[in-house]
Amino acid sequence: MGTPDFAVPCLEALIKSRHKVVAVFTQPDKKKGRGYKFAPPPVKELAQRQGIKVFQPETLNSEEVLHVISELEPDLIVVVAYGKILPKAILRLPERGCINVHGSLLPKYRGAAPIQWAVINGEKATGVTTMYMDEGLDTGDILLRAETQIGEDETSGELFNRLSVMGAELLLKTLQGLEKGDIIREKQDDKKASYAPMLNKSLSKINWNNPAAEVHNLVRGLNPWPVAETTLDGKVLKIYKAKPVFGGNKSAHSGEVLSLNPFSVACCKGSTVEVLELQLEAKKRMSSVDFVRGYKLRVGAILG
Image (cartoon, rainbow, N blue to C red):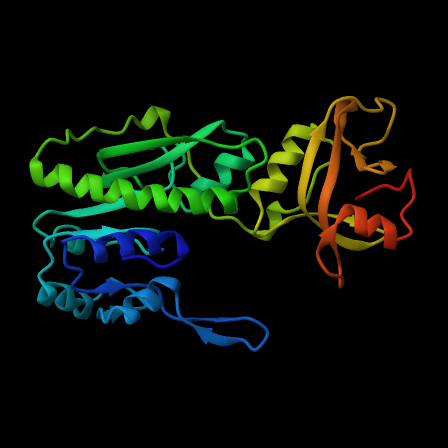
């Protein structure tokens, strides 16, 4: 059971292993792009190429879905970024239970966007966790973890890709360990838990009153979606890449353009952010060097 790109390496790993994937459950096709045409989830595309049965129920809370899964007689259900809550009846159905691959070091960052929030919050390390699923939100017993360092300038999209591969490796290791019986289940410590809610566009607005490091983390954490943004001359200015720089003008206003070469913006307490890649409303995404060359930007302008 999985939907986005993050789940694809896990399905690929299962297909290539000696395990048999009897079916794939994924989210319904959604309308995308300018033509607003229905597009299948990445997991569905892979499953269909491999001739695997695909089911896309709107809800799992139905007798029909329960019957379908019962007929498949799965020994185990693997869930990776599926996007739906599994009801108790399904959790109890497989003989060996339901296992989830989650993009954080649980119990930290339970929820829908663990990778992005780890970057936004400036974490130095994160990882993937396999766990037995229960009725809570990412609260089940931990099986295995794999940790990795987060690069100083790494975006959530880049980290997303790395963790998806790590998740596939950890999944196979977990299945092997369960068969051998040498994995000790670990109860999660709820006192150490944190929550990573789904991202939305309301998070995109850059607050230039924050320190440069926090602005930098927001920019890379919201890349590739929904993308951090500010305003320039009344137009939306999306910022895809930036970096904090040492030194600054403590008397400058937050959001004030301090220089054009490089394109630097004042943050709080004299800290500064250098903007590297951006996109002005109705324009193409480009480097800040190209932007400054073609736009009449002035030192002292205020980004809102």
